[in-house]
Image (cartoon, rainbow, N blue to C red; front, side):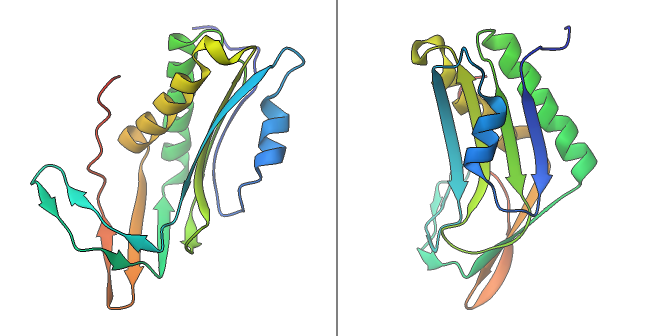
Length: 162
């Protein structure tokens, strides 16, 4: 696959995610649509163990600690961007950003943004694919800190469509 002439941003960062700056970097004069997904830290969490059919009692989250092996994680983020470009050739710009460090409720933790000339080009699906694949293959680890303890949270999510 030849390199894309379109902007691609992918990073692991401890800095705040600046949507306006990222959007500016992936927007071209031909861009007419941007689909953006942002994941956030919840202050109240209820999880279901899908594999075991277990429903956990809702609990309070004080903060999350995210960790990643940056070189490997960013390599996998680039892979996700390449996959998006292979499936949706009309996507212009792509931004994939994951925060690490101590993050409190209501804080954005991850951002996936895709731009295209028009909303009916698959740009929504491309952004959805981006977050699903990030959760599936990018090595980012999350520890949940609660008032009464802490635990590493393992991802159970497997996308239904690849």
